[in-house]
Image (tube, rainbow, N blue to C red; front, side, top):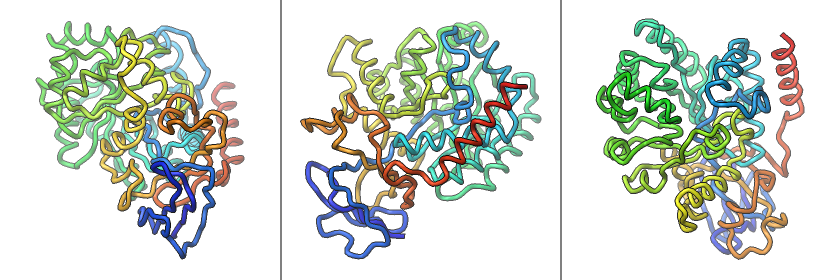
Length: 417
């Protein structure tokens, strides 16, 4: 399929963008005389699709449930007991709804960690979004053999749906829920299978204290000591890293994900050390976390909160300017996941969104970057294109009413049992 985006605002002027199959073939005023689909983009700007680098998509089912609680109480008394009741049909409905929310707010790619990978993959593949989905690993009471058997089973389920828009990966939950022996096997297996590994790291001060007590070192040091750090690792949160740990992550080529809204809401006691991590040449991207700790999947909001939190915590208004926030939400995420996307350039994958410049939050247009980061939210997105396929046109997504209906039935089923 070919698409012509005609008269769109890009790089300070009006131009055309011609998409052929799944690539951006040409960007010029004369591009695309013949196309299967023409989008009149007058009054709209084009942006790279947003990349959400840390989600638990099916937790859309728990939005607004158990808010305003301390982290451990929230997890142990509310979230984990409720998650234990979730069935594959619930996961599929929750993930499908999350995908709909992401499409409508400008996300074209996401990295997800959640249970029942087959249900997760089924919903994601139907949505058309680009994704990297985890085979989740958790349970210090499991042997390495049990971990190996369960992981391979979950990975096999994901590989049934593997394609150019869906990649399988490994998701060890955290250092306090996965044993040293399990982590060592995960590391070896991920290298053998060429798999990305997605993990929570240093989210709370208690995690650091427990790691020092149990292993005699801080979390990143502990992972370095067991040979776990390498360039296929993506770590979410990274709030309580010190300079030495940042150096270890940087030398190993690890990636870090800033989740400002979730971190503030759960009061994790620190701020993602963006400037320090960047000084160690660590690729830093953005994630929303799950809807039970955010409570939405709007990456426009995440860009704003990331920038403001960095300025506030450092007492420096020049830290994380709008252009860098956009890069964190686009090219940094795509690079971390190994996709040739995240930029509006010829030869890149056609993962693009259009935003309405007539929205009040875009007027006046002194700086599109500033308006996008500091003024906008996901409702300004009018069109979404992923892998050259049009997923949303004029705010309409095919089948969204049915997706919402199934989601509401799933919520009712979970909370009435």
